[in-house]
Image (cartoon, rainbow, N blue to C red):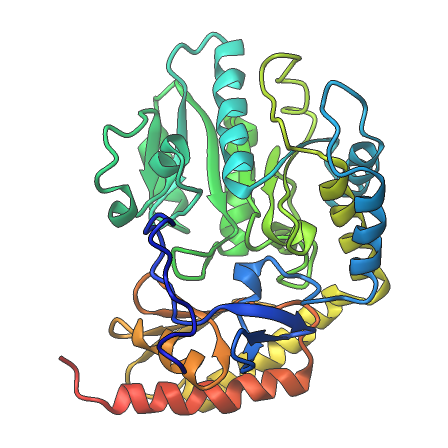
Length: 401
C-alpha cells in the first residue's frame, strides 16, 4: 500500500483515524482505491451499502430522480414520503413515520418523543432507561444515552434524565426503576453495534415489552445498524415476535444515500404535532426514492433470505476456523452482522486486513466486526474467511505486550 495513497488534507478537521487509502469506485461487494487496488467490502460503509456498489437497478432509479427533483422542502407534500412510510409501516406493523437524514437524528427524535410523552402525562423530569455499552450517536443527547465513557470524555456536562442498566437482566431493570414515577421509556439496540455486537436475548425482549405495557412506558428500539434486513428479518426485534412503540432507522435504508426514519406505533405516533420537530433535508425526494428502491430490490432479490443464509454460512465457518482458538472469546451476531471478540485489543487487524484486500472494522477495542452488503455471496463469504482467518491466527500467535 502506498504511503501516499490518501494524503490527509490540512483543511479537513482531524476527526477520524483513517487508513492510508482513498476509494474511487465499487462494483457489487468490491471496491477499488485510487491506485487501482481491489478490496472485498466486509464493512459495507458500516452497514450502509445494503445493495453493494453500483447496483444495476438502484443507480438508474437515483439518476432518474436526480433529473427530476433532489430537494424541495417540508413546506410541501413529498409523495415519496407517503410511499416509503406506507412500506415501512407495512413491514414493521407500526403506523406512522417521520423522516430525517441520519441515525443520530432518528435517535434524537426518539428521545424527544419520550420526553414529550412524559410531559403530556404531567411528568416534569422524564427519565429514560438506557444500556451499558450502548451507542446511539454523538450529539449531546444521544452521546448521553450512549454507554461509552471514552466517547463521552471531554463533552460534559452530559444531558440528565438517563438510567443505565446492564443487558439481558430483567431484574436489574426492575430494580433500577421500581418506585420511580418519572420513567417514561426503555431505549436500546436489539444488537449493539459499536458496543461490540452484543445481542439482546429474545426472552429478554419479550420481558421488556411486557414491563413497558404494565408500566405505560414507551419501548424504543434503535434498529439503525441491525435493522433493514441485516439479520434475516426486516428488523432484528422481529425474531422475538414483538413490536416496539418507537423504532429509529437509518444506515441501510437508503443503500448509501443519507436517510433516517422514526417509525412509531399507536402509543407514540401522535405525540408530535406541527412545530414540535422538523428537519430541512429529511424526507427529501432523492432520499425517499433511495429508500423505496432499496426495499423493492431487497424484496425482489430475496435479500433477507440471502442475509440469513450467507450469514449463517459465514458464522459457521468462523466458528469452525477460529472458535476453539485460545484468545477467541466469542463469535456472535446474526445474519450479516457478526462480531469476533478476542481477549486483547486488536486494532492492528484493521490495517492488516486492509493490506490483504479486506475491509472490516474493529469496535469496542477487541471485536472484529463484519457488516458487508446484503448481496454477499457464499463464494465471497468464503473469500472473507480465506483472508481473515490467517490474519487472526497470526495475530493471536504474537506475544501479548
